[in-house]
Image (cartoon, rainbow, N blue to C red; front, side, top):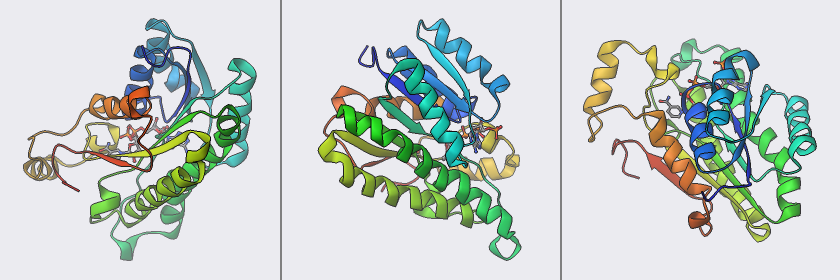
Length: 247
Ligand code: NAP
């Protein structure tokens, strides 16, 4: 277990990709901070991390609020003394064609997806640089590279996350903190379950591997990027999309 003794924070870990990442890191030996908006809904993830024999800390946090993020990191440092891994996974969509997109929906998506990533990264960098070890993985999206009709706010936030990833990777490489992104294609979670059946069918036809991704497909990529084997990889965007985009 390459993550034995490591402490990992996973945001948006109550369900979907975040939950699969929390479980995968626990399977590999990490203690996991299950960070999400609603601690009641995080309970299932907490239970499965504990079932895997690891410690879990259920923390209520809105990543869009820097004070809450700072309080979360302080709580983790107080409870477990360090942070080794951060997975910036919390994210939302508020889709509309641009002419109909409300300013509040533009701002909200940027505030959670981009500013949330900034807040959490900034808050963990101090302990990580101090201990000369850190692994940060930001969950971007295929849409941040390809664009997607109805998702100008979301695509802009995810493209920005990629630029942010590469910059922070350059800034803190000398402190042995690696920063990478995983760009999922279309994954079967609550975020995509609302798509109409015909849209899903059209999407599926564009995926050479012929199916939507599973949260576990993304979790495996995250586990690799935070592992010892990936120690020489930083500033990379790992596309996990069934071949939909070959970047
Ligand atoms: P999901 O099933 O909707 O899960 C996202 C989780 O994040 C939810 O538990 C959500 O809580 C939580 N969250 C939302 N806003 C938050 C905030 N401000 N602070 C803390 N937690 C917050 O979505 P998913 O599909 O697993 O997506 C996870 C990540 O992958 C996102 O960054 C998403 O953009 C990215 N991604 C997903 C796909 C896909 O096809 N599913 C593709 C590419 C990228 P609530 O439910 O209470 O809002």
